[in-house]
Length: 184
Image 1 (tube, rainbow, N blue to C red):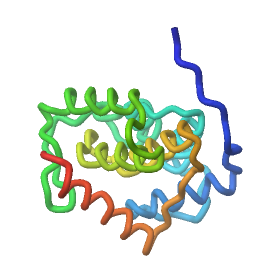
Image 2 (cartoon, rainbow, N blue to C red):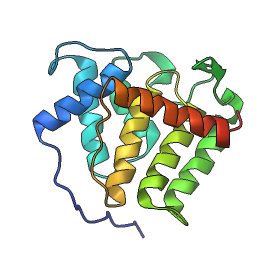
Image 3 (cartoon, rainbow, N blue to C red):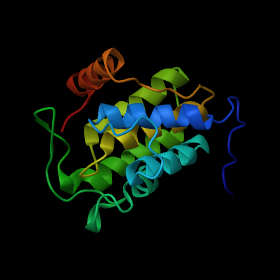
Image 4 (cartoon, helix red, strand yellow):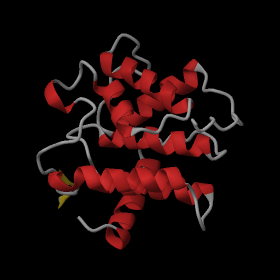
């Protein structure tokens, strides 16, 4: 039996809100074309992936595949990487461990919050995903979509993290989790 979608508590984002989210999320990654650049493949893909997240889709491979279709070529679109990567000067999880780490991560997501608030749970799952860093590129964009899908699933509003001070706090949040809870 399929699990039913949770009831929608918050309305879907307007086109303007969605464009702002995509602009800010891309900006965090250093990609800042025109403010609302419909017709830009990465922008358009990001909008499509965000609409999936709004419909409670938190599956990273699906979100990543939607984001990177036609942007990232070859075997890496929607698939886990097979090469080591450095994130902030530190190695992310070893490629050979990605299948098992992501399987365990998905189990935790499906289990849902246990002895923590929905807010804390969504952030913990996001931070853990970012530490695993399963894709060769676009882990940040994918992770922020996962964060929002989980927030919506658990009755919390969509969150747009803005370039600048919020971005720095966001990075610090991930680094703190990595230092305290993650073993590469």
